[in-house]
Image 1 (tube, helix red, strand yellow):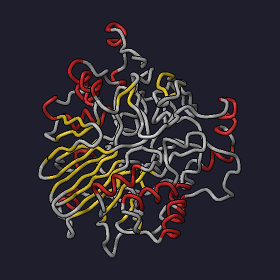
Image 2 (tube, one colour):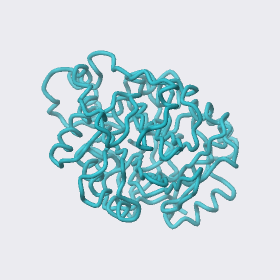
Image 3 (spheres, one colour):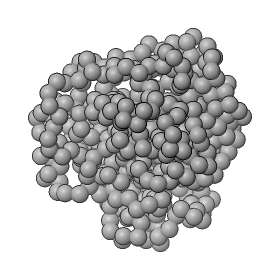
Image 4 (cartoon, helix red, strand yellow):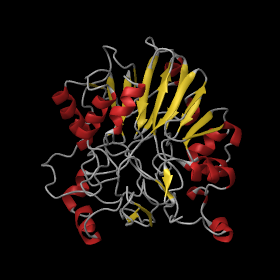
Length: 414
């Protein structure tokens, strides 16, 4: 086996709690049997490089460029919608309602059940409370005010999708956690009982509270500690109820598998698609808005149907592109495709397909005026990497995973 070996017991005991835990025992045996695990690591559906191209000197020059630094933050505080428990307690008329809480966190109410995708209520997406990307807007609603949740769904174990304080708070509820294979080791260390964990490999399904949840492929990577072992899987997710179907992309680069997912599980009433933190330096593991729209159309069998909710943007500063650029790019891509998109303020509930679904570019009054940066953008993001950082500094830390078939080391980057 060519992947990184688990840490020795003494070193494992010294590892910060936020780094989580290594899979072991029956969990590790299941990972080793997975058809998606080969040469000591989980493999992507198509080759994907996570090591940024170019030199760190070039990264630093771009990252600290004055104009670009200004444009990576809003010119004024971003608004949030004051969601209330009473409002969320009122059943959606159509049977389907989505509430984007910022970044990739979405509360989905579908056919009488409630699912919380990638909940991150922490102030920073980082293993440390004093460093790392900080919120650009407050949490729209306290976690305790959401009410009961039937299922918490996690796409992968990066810090901006799997948040230690949020999971510890949810561990005290009765909710079920649906996670990709191996991620359950982190949750068990943080107090989630094994009996409430459902770990899935790609294309496996479970039934929870009358819903069918299926882990579907994604093109990304994993890692929380000082080494990226590729011992936990990443996934997109399909949720099907009696009347509605929805899709959450997690983090992913574009790949032809969206067509297969759509043919097998679609079409969807709504898709939640990652459209932020992209860069030409890591084109394989995140999508641009144009690629996100292409994925949405693939999932819908090539037709401009359903509603796309853009996610993974506007909450954390994870890449040097202007903070509002993903929103503008999504608007342009939707207009070109003739597709319906939803543009809620963080915390604003909406019913996909409803006449009053939000579609205004709410971010424009808060954007920094000026021409778009001409220099290429892209640095590794702490929010998704197992990186050691100081404020406003990004340092890729891990080397350990390899591109499928390449034998070349990759750094944990984004």
